[in-house]
Each structure stands twice: as C-alpha cells, then as structure tokens.
Length: 269
Length: 331
Image (tube, rainbow over all chains, first blue to last red; front, side):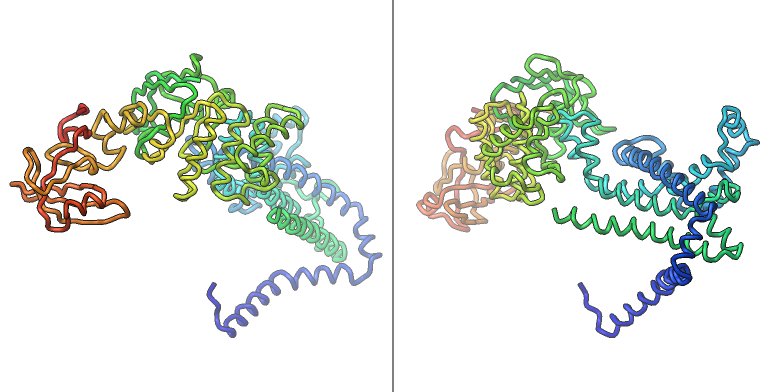
C-alpha cells in the first residue's frame, strides 16, 4: 500500500469526517435529540397514537411481503441469469435494474395506470373482490417493486464467482436439482442472500414516493410509517414525526449491525 | 465395467468437438484420454459421465445403453480438475456427501468416510475445511468423495493439471497404487504424454475431435499409427525425410553407407544425456537441423563436440515413419 505523507492523510481524514458528519451523523443525531429531549413520556404517548400504530403496522406488513417476494423471486431470477442462457437475457437484466434508477413517484404512477379501478386489470380484480390501489395490496406491490433489484444485485456476482463446479459435482454424486440447491448452492450464496435481504428490508421500511401515490395517503387507513412522518410533521406534531423517524432509523441501524456482527464469524470458521 | 462408445458426435455452435467417435474401454483398467487441449477429450469424458449430451451416437456402460440416463443416476465417480470441493463442508462431510444424499444412516456414513480418508491418507484432516488443505490434499479428498458412492466407473478430468510438478509425480504413483487396491475402471484425461504412458494400461490419443489411435502405451510408442501420434508421444526429428526419435539415431565419425553426413552445430549436456544438433550437408541450404540424443559416455567415446563431422543413420529397430506422406508404421 502506498503511504501518503502525513499532512495529506490528515486532510483526507478531516474531509471524510466532515462529509459523513454533515450528511449523515449530525442530521440523525438531531433527530434523536429532538425525539428524546421532552422525555420518555412524550415518546411513549406519540408512539401510542392510533395513526402511528397503524402506520407502523402497515409498514411492517409491506416490508414482510416485500422481503419474502424479493427473496424468493430474487434468488430464482439470479439463478436464471447466471446459470442459463436464453434469448433476451440482457434485456431482462436491464429491466431488473430499472426500479433502482426510476424515481419511486414514477413507479407509483405506472402502477396506478395498470391497477387503478378504471383500468381493465383493476376492474377485473375489483370484480373478484380485490382492491389494489388505495389499499394494502397496492402498498405491498409498490414496496416490492422499488426493492426488486437489491437481492439480485447481491446474489448474481457471488453466483458468478463460485461457478457451477460444485453444483455439477453434487449432481455427479447423485444429488437431485432440489438437493443440489439446498445443500450446495444456497450455502454458497448464503451471505449474499442475507445482505440482499437486509438491504431490501431497509429499503422497504423507508419507501415513501411510490407508496404515497398508490396508497392515496389516507389518514388512519393507508398511511405507512413514512407517510405518517410527513403528515404529522406538516401538522405541527413534530414530536410524533421525530419519534417515528428515529424508530425507522434504529430499525435500519439494527439490521446493518446484526449483519456486521454475524459476518466475521463466518470468515473465521 | 466396460464402456462402449458408438458413433458419438458433438458440436458447440460451429465447433465440432467430437466427430464420429467409436471406442471400447476395457474393464478394471486405467485408460488415459491423451491429446492437445481442444482435442475433445474432456468433452468425451463429460459425455460418458452424462454431464454433457452427445448430438448423436450412444454410450453403453456394461452393455446397458446409458445415453438417456442423467448424470445423477449413472453412479459414476467424477473428479474435476479444480477439485470442485464443497467449500462450506468439512473434509469428512465432503467425502460423505454422496452417501448422505442416499440417506445412509449416520453411523454407516461415518464408518465409510473413515475408511476412505485412511485410504487417501487424510484421516487427520477430517474436520478441516477444504480451504485449509493443499492442492494435492484437496485432489485426494475429491477422489475419496468420488469413490464413496462406490462408482462402477471413475472419471478424472486432468486430475493433476492444477498441481505443481513434484506433487503431480507423487500423485501419479499414488493413483497407480490406489487403483491396485480399489479395482475400479478408471478413465482420466491428460495432455501430458508422460503421465499417460506412466499411469495408464491403455492410452487413447485424440486430436481435433477424433481418435487417432488407442492401445497399450508400449504399442503406441513403438508403432504409432500416424505422424501426430508419433510426435505427440515423444520428441521427434526428421532424418532423411523420415520422422524418428532423437535417441534412435546412431552417430558415426566415419562415413557409413546410407548415412546422412553433417556437422555438429549445437551441443548441450543435461545430466547423463547429451543433446546435439546436426546440420546436414545437403544441396538445400535451409535443411532443418537434426536433433540427436545420446549418453555422455557414448559421446565422449566418439570424441564428439561442436564442429565435428558426423554420419547419422537410424538405429536397428527404430520407429521410423515417412515425414511427408501418410502413414504406416515401419517396423
């Protein structure tokens, strides 16, 4: 490694600390401070308001399904992309990255165009008793959509790197496709999957734009936690807004910490 | 268990990997598929294993047509060039993989794994991960893993290709001895002619998707069916428009009838051996140098050295084949 002269190193360090501090640490610290400064009483009471409870519940539901769908779908699609050759593979892989590059608001609008009550698909689903837009399924759909590429992006490079040697060996030893997947492929990509799931979890917890459009943002009915934050902040209930914000931040920090703690053990063993 | 390959063809896009391959592989032997890379030998091995499907033709194992049987049902042990160790499993678990797939009881798996680890001298490494083993140890583990399923056939794809020269040599001897203990029909792929001649009972030389010749190593060496086989199985040089091995040339310091006259222009001494290059004195200026090998004692006795004039002829009983037109072995 090249050692830079001492002054350069200090300048670089200072720059990094300022950058991260001003962009991440200081704002998050202020949220925590504002939340906790009125005392625990205020925190508890703002958390127990019905709209906050409903918001957290909805966010929980949306995150659960988004993680589940993206886990199963993500691992499946990754296997398809890496292990099989087919026409339109490049196109598929570009399409899969789309949710990351398109603004979530646009995602929301696009979902509206397909599933709103006035459209053929929406009318059909409504006819058999399912409402998508302005209801929980729409929220799940939007959340799943925006977090779609995260598992795939983690798993594909690892699958490519480990190659199919081990899988072929397992087959030659008599393992069926299913046994090969559970005993050989999955253990090989385990950590990539865990990372992908954590990223999906964090992304789903924080989703705002797409959900705002498809949910209709109806208070006490279709407001997720992030929507509650916005609503309460604009309604001059800052305490509630800060509390929910801090809760969302802590959940994300917790996810990342758990992975960081688990990960080194794997490497040592 | 004998293998019978009839009329197998295989191409990848425009590239014909195998063209009309017919081959019988005898039981209980070690057979080497020998040839340059891209010659189709690995493809043939993978077709026998069922890891690749032939475009046409059949593979019969022990008289039963195996063409349509998938790899996991063939009960063939396969050892990969890069080991293909299960990285997340210990050595013992790796070896026992095929048995636990078959739902053996744990006690029986442990017993069998113990036995195999002793066979490949890895008993003290049972609880290590593959990443903690050397290349040679990993390859022995892979071999034990393939043997665990008691295969009717053991296939090895360039088994020593990724190892350094010294370990290669050890493993070669060891594979030979192992085969005497575990009498299982074995086929291995190699591009190293020395490895093929040393380890195999039966060598199949392949080139450009075809079988050039097959037979016992000595037969191939002494009676090559083509210039390709002759030059692939050992060094060759051209003497009087014939291919001949450099150590099959007799050197004289006096004219002999039918001898090729020349002058020694290169001289290299390697251990017990002397390698010389002789420029023939012929009409054409650009006649290629003739390589000759002889022992140092003979070279000294003849008083050879750079610039000395010599006459060359084939030794009696040397393998000689015409250099230009094809191709019948001269006795």
